[in-house]
Length: 271
Image 1 (cartoon, helix red, strand yellow):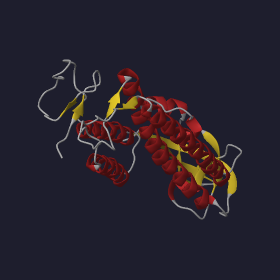
Image 2 (tube, rainbow, N blue to C red):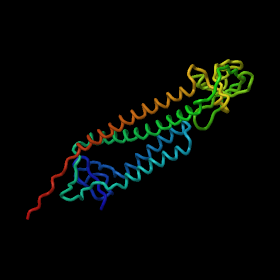
Image 3 (cartoon, one colour):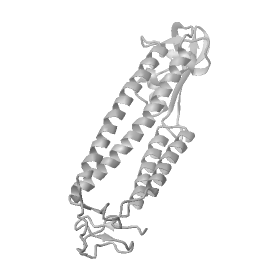
Image 4 (cartoon, rainbow, N blue to C red):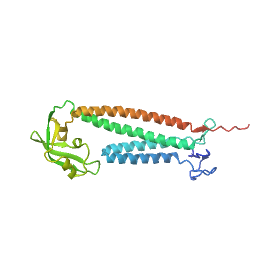
């Protein structure tokens, strides 16, 4: 069956894919749905990939998310569109509110994108908090002081700078992530040295059973495992809530867009 386009102004269907204006009224034709889908998928791919690269997401996660977007666009483009070549029992539909139709279509695309983003990033935040929660759960710890010997400001091609320090805890050499202590990121090494100079004493939790920077965590009154548990539960709560709201909005917009169509009256044939 030939692919058809519909004029949003007069409702005339064009079976030829070459003209960009309606032969009947001269207005611009609605672009091919398959092209629209791939353009939308490309925009989603660019925005999501840029966001994930800026925040340092793993490459495998970026590849999986890109694959999901492309797969969705491919499946959507293969769906059989409704055309003017329908039978009398299934007559073509005419857009009677073209401006509202376009606005609702944009809203549907944005809502669908929001559903994907909330699901993806909500899952990532939840899993990170879950992993940290169970890493510290049941671990023996002691309260102590971290004495800064040297602070380090290291930049990377992806994500933000890595801010950490070497120092001592009870006379033993340890490493500590300084970002929770500083709250805001310094702009360079000089600013970091001014904010965390040699000899700075920081209250910490020491976890002897762990390795690396995980051994030394800032003592802000809440154990790392408890804080991560709260973050995981908050991510689940607000993530599911956001998904529910955006999914409901998506269904409402789809229902409203249906009202922009009117079924054409089937032509009566004379015997």
